[in-house]
Image 1 (cartoon, rainbow, N blue to C red):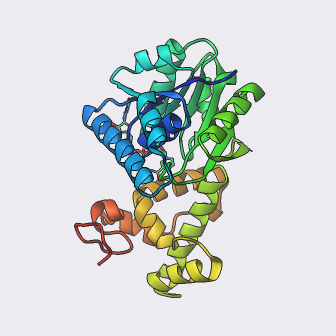
Image 2: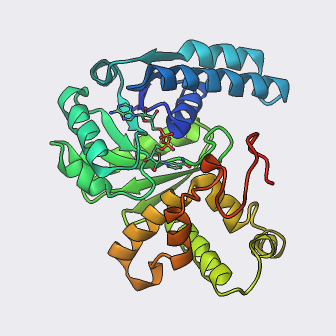
Length: 289
Ligand SMILES: NC(=O)c1ccc[n+]([C@@H]2O[C@H](COP(=O)([O-])OP(=O)(O)OC[C@H]3O[C@@H](n4cnc5c(N)ncnc54)[C@H](O)[C@@H]3O)[C@@H](O)[C@H]2O)c1
């Protein structure tokens, strides 16, 4: 099937970026959130991202106008379900919340619509099992910030049909993304490797092998990583990273046991940039102290 309209549920950090990519890719796009403030902030973000694109010469004024014309918002998830043929949820990473969303998708979505989740680690097979249309359920894992990040990781769950995979790969390419398709496994490719590297970095810090700054420097200059593992975890959130590691530990075994130092930082409220302190300390303007 060819996707023509995309509904994005959740207008947070990811949902607003996915809506940007969808509208920019030429899809009629509806962005929905339970919070009117988040919806408003999401729209502002999309307008600013388009303005920046124009200012940097990456987006033409015509492309900006078309993207904005493609985009609408809604405060009713049921309405979004009734009028779009690809639904992508980007609500918080909690299984109960996502199961609730998939139950609504199943009840109100058009026959043949694709039901996708942007989860970073949870099981798409488990989400699909709550519906009566598992063949139409899939993972579409975008990266933050969506307008800039090139990858879309497509996750094929146990019952996902080939037609669903192909339709989503085509959408990803039209959004300007490079696509990889994987068989469902905890943490997919990216979250699993990233969690492993980040956890190892915490073990090194705990063992006193080097300072956080030097571990970051070594990975950036020696291994060509664009960010060090501690800079990255401060951006992602230490609590988010701990959740992923706990899940990988439970599902894949001992080698993913979260470092005690990471656990201690989270218990101390050092959650990263969002709390002003993670591995590093931050000023109120977001700059590193
Ligand atoms: N932040 C990242 O770097 C990143 C990267 C890849 C994937 N993800 C995944 O994307 C998803 C969203 O993450 P985020 O960082 O955008 O979260 P976020 O907290 O920034 O946004 C979540 C949004 O969902 C809304 N919401 C909550 N319940 C809702 C409901 N029932 N219906 C509609 N909207 C609802 C909230 O109001 C909020 O605006 C998670 O599954 C996360 O694991 C995040």
